[in-house]
Length: 120
Image (cartoon, rainbow, N blue to C red; front, side, top):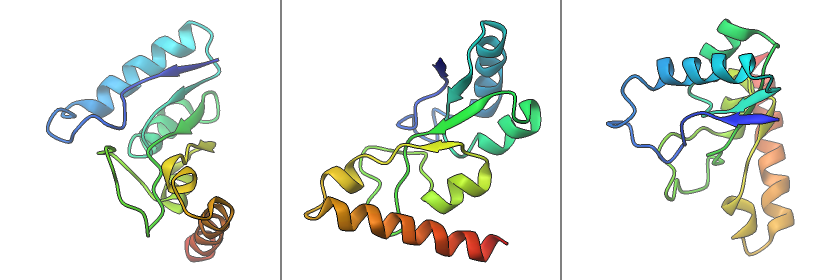
């Protein structure tokens, strides 16, 4: 069971204090028995510092380098999200809206592999 923290469509100006809010919501989720949280990759490092591997992190708002942000405000590339501590990624429209979804997914995987080599 995952608990949703702050939506990735929340804008930067409305997001002041977002990290604190996400951490507070994550504490509540852990206390309630949740296995993890849904949170922006921007807050993933703070969640990892606070909870280690105790909570799993699912990050929506994932946009590969070549994709537009769309309605998402607080986004990260797949490689950035993994490097920041995400366990799972949600990549929607960059794949589903692509002319060739399989090719789009393969391109994302390639980008992640390239990012992993840079981060090691």
